[in-house]
Image (cartoon, rainbow, N blue to C red; front, side, top):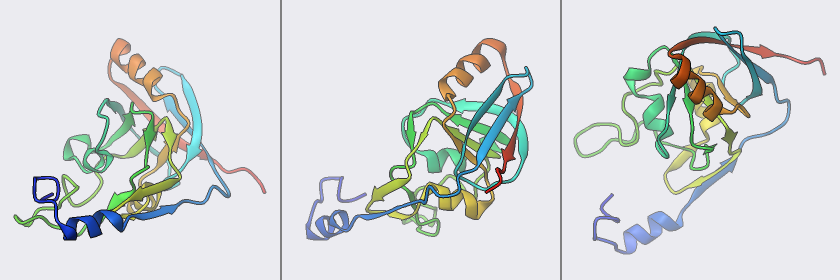
Length: 176
């Protein structure tokens, strides 16, 4: 960003002043269940696509960059647990914005490669000057499940001590 590279001007001020924000509805929340191959089960709330999936459960200890992690091809077919406690607060930038080399600005590739996303706390409100949609909207658009309210640090400790583990995600639709 040239604004942060020592070239702060009026154009940059206008860009940062025009913050995009929004929020996701908390109506009709669906319970999602993660079952691991060792028999442990974790329940949380769905905030992405509601389709059952399975895959190897892996973790990332990064503090920022959920858009980059989700689009990283190295996570293809894996259920990604983020250990940073709050995710989603800055939304998702335009997937079509390109840098001067013709590469996507905030993504590692053109689509999400992770099979699902697990987070401790999902922010239903997002705000960032570059945001075009919420993380929930993006996951639903791409057909990727997301679950929050799961202790991702506990899952990380389990994977570190017991090794790689397969998991599956299912959804519990409650009658209205």
